[in-house]
Length: 325
Image (cartoon, rainbow, N blue to C red; front, side, top):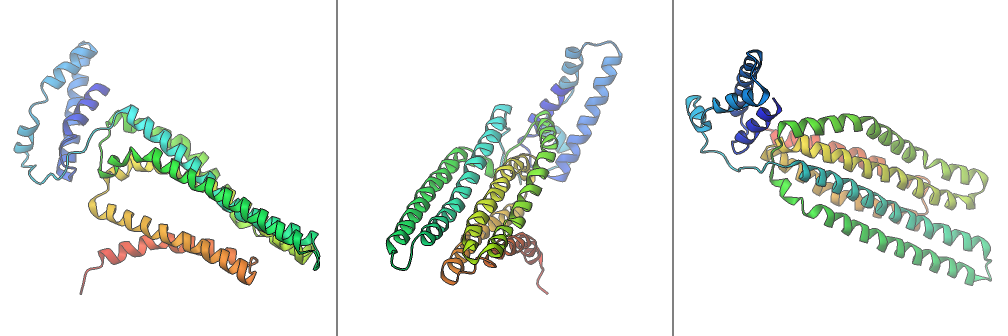
């Protein structure tokens, strides 16, 4: 029976995804299943039953013409992905998520290292011993830039791994059997994704505790708390990026292929806004921290931006579909 499903998927791969075509496909599948079961009950073998059903399938153009479905408006013929392509894409997304998440954590750890070194050597020095303070700043800046350079390299490497799958952005088709396999994989990954998401959220929410604890012990320890906050929150972001990339790969394969042009435009707009907003939020965090020393409160910019970023998609959708009066 799986052979019939794959055959039907391939026959409809070049047709437009419209309600009429989908309805016809389901009706044909139902009829072919009935015929297949009838032949099996008559004692036909698997190969005989499948061969007879396929031979009686008929010409796809004639069936479209009989049902009055027009094909001249078909915009694009999407390629049918093979299992090898799908597995390669999933592996690339997983790897890219790991390196991107690690790069984000290293960027956060670099800032934490700068604050840590600067504070550590400042506490070791005195008003007459400015050399220790200078060494701390030099070591901190050097470590931060080294980690930032490594992080950028990871970002570039991640982008290169996904570059060969850009053709999927234009649309694709999946055989039914392969789609069911991906759905099962997504279902088995669901618990892991939820645990990772909850853990990441908890790490980000609890990370300011280090600042409060440091301030409670001694005001000079607040800077150490900031370093711990950045390292802990960076770990939470790593979980978001890594496991979010894996979840996103399943979503891409199972859902994004059905997006119409309007939804694709909406998705691109959301990604473009996020690409601008998050770097600005990070710049604001660093500016208010180093210039005004407001490490105790400026961390709140990240959950605020997260909420606003999540709301943008809904606002954009409402504004896009708002009809002029």
